[in-house]
Image (tube, rainbow, N blue to C red):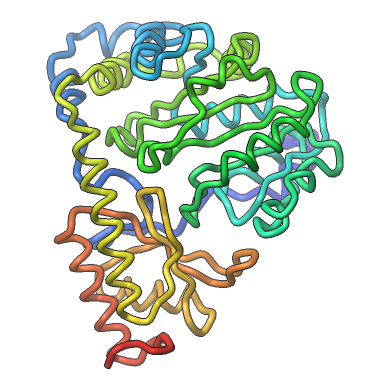
Length: 364
């Protein structure tokens, strides 16, 4: 390896590993357990050879048009990418000046700090309790980007709109840091700033088709912001990022008049409420969620032990050790109810066997 490769600050970075391994029931990654959007499947099956042999559109113009129709935003306010991760990474790299700080309230999406470091910046986590008490703390250190996940991953809560308005105002408009609002889970919250984003100069919203639309394997994401902001993000992400097949699938899903995604989202929200009740009945204290998952702190402070015990029974959820303000916890993806019943049965078996500390007040 060259002495000048990699960049010195890259040496401490690790490959992303969320700890997923094959298991009978995987509720760890917040993908759509109802399946892929049927209209997307039909579009892929109808694709011709050109979808494989020809380069895709440089900047996914048909996808942009579909996003504009679906979310009622101008085409020139949209940037696309290979998943919202790609769009976030591109935005982090495009922001200036070079170096500087990316601040974010935590716990939150685990790739924010790596993306900051990959772009030659420093990630600065602020506990959510401090940030909610005063959004101005996210502006300390003169950051180049302020990242907020809404609904937040892994907690599922939604930062209040007045708080967000205060943050945007304090950030100082176009002269201040870019506020990146990650709305990956907004379909499950029925609350979004996406239609307003093109007129707010210091706001960029990122979205994904991995969750409500069931297209995680195709890696389709996008951002909406002021047209000049969207253009800089697309310059950073480069051409040909959305494949022809992915674009056709995404357009079909977004244009679907049958409302499959809306129906699945409603069922997901209903099952979220049922799971919240079921966990509460077992003495756990799940956090109220407006995403497609539920987070609950674990008694005894060992998310790894809870994770290992559930995995031994064929069920995977996502452990989160040492979260700011919360300690250790588990995140469970919402799924069709029979899958959640299997999770609850495994949880009951773990508690009955005494493999983890029993929640206070749990039923015998």
